[in-house]
Length: 76
Image 1: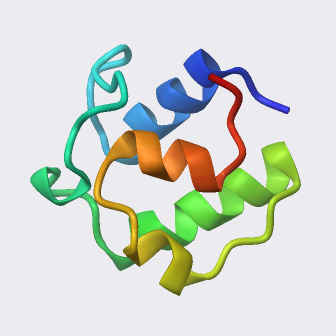
Image 2: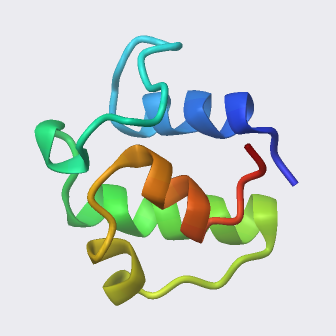
């Protein structure tokens, strides 16, 4: 399992943001790079690091980065 900080850093890279940008309360749709490729990459990140199988539908219900962390079972 990845730590919250490591997972957020991976998401920063996925969204092509400077490391340390994401904290949790950010709205997902505010990121230009949050697209179908990022969604698939997020699914792979959650699966390979936290052994969580997610569907696109589950992710699309999330409105914030914190909600994404929750469905990916990232510990607070």
